[in-house]
Length: 507
Image (cartoon, rainbow, N blue to C red):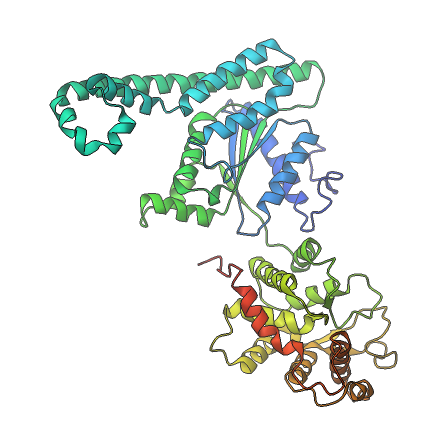
């Protein structure tokens, strides 16, 4: 390894600016590994190709990573093609979208060099011939020549024409066997021609780039995204194409998958007892797993993606000077529960759904809403739940129930005199006190509520503060009698939950 081939200390400028999970470090590590592994293969006189499986669960940021990686590779002068397999799985053969994307990448090079243009035209010709289902064409021709029946029509009119086929059986199958042998031979030749032309093309591009003293643009990186979301047969065909057609010098594939889900897709084709894991690893040189993201970083990522511009959200720390008060509260809360990244993302989706349908003037109190959302996400429903017991059990079992040191510097909490320097509050007590009062009928006039600020505890002061805030924003009458909007949160969460996939990774 060269002396300067070490992990960079800063991300590629501009490309990873919105990378809140520091995936740029994974990118630098993988690119260093792949480039050096290709160099090692060259030194060992082995085929200089590589297939890397990037394995991450649903919501793990695979697409974000691949699109930024594509930009970084381009900035470094590499040839890089990006294929969204799920968007293209309507194609008859997955080879076609791959060739289309490679064609776009090579255009700048082949337009300047006639030999490269000719060589790529030959590679495309054989590639598209492979994708054109020679076998199907051969079988169609055999049936048509022998019986006068088009094979596609045959499928629709099988009962009607079966006698005609039977009468010509020996002649038909003689032709059929000959066509099969010829088709196999043509396919084998086409594969060899495709691989040899692609290799010559990449070698020539590398040579020309070196002569012009430019950045090395090989290996050719082909990034395949969303493979696990494709129809099972298409996913299998794509893997087969990668294995048999792109085992060529200077070609590197990075396939982003939820490997567990991809195994389920393969079993859907080959049966539940099929060893899908072993089958899959025939296609990959190595698998790279994203590390579990830091919870605070992950919450920040989701917050900036979905909630940072929402002014109807309220946290108990909103009077502080910090600009990211809601974010700090969310980080504090989600870090206190044993939640996986997928759990947290589902909770954010629930909250976002509630915001979408929110029509009240009162604000959404995060200290009540978020724990209720977590409870719903964990239980998947509020039906038949001993609600009071379950929420208290959930909160009491987490470190969220511990005293929380208020951020500093601060303005105030409820009033300028209510919090002394270094004062701690208990979030569980805040929640329980507010939840209890929110489920009690308003029995005082608005004026009396404003006067009810002289309470012994911070928790009571804060509860009165948010109830007063709701009273004002909703413009309740002095003689209003009813429950707080907060008491409706469980019903809203249950409705919003109908629009969220709450399945677990191991389902």
